Amino acid sequence: MGCIYVVVLTQLIPSMDHLSQSSRSAISSDVFQMSGDFISVREALKLIPQFKGNKQEVLAFIGNVGTAFPVINHEQEATLYKLVLTRIRGKPRKAISHRNLESWAELKQFLQNSYTEKRTLDYHASQLFRARQGKDE
Image (cartoon, rainbow, N blue to C red; front, top):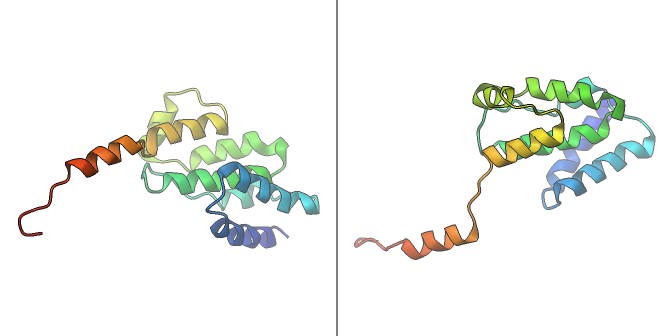
């Protein structure tokens, strides 16, 4: 039964890219709660890739973890959180070990603040205005 759920999730995630994280989580949660079943923590952990600090991968990591939490039994969230921490390697792992992050919400906030791009529209506009065409271009 758990394998069927994993297939459903992999089909939902690509088609939900345009939705916010909370919308994706709500939809994923509804898919599982309609049947009244949850997947095991082991199955949920299979959805979560390792994260080594690559800024291009942080949003996928956050999205996959965000999808895993609603589909497990709420009583097992602390266990899943501890296992999510084991999927983080390298510099992010060291940085997290020096902080007292006790929940997925706190870890997610830390990852977003530390590993996502923070360039504003003003930054991009100033880069555009500073750009000069080369002599041979």
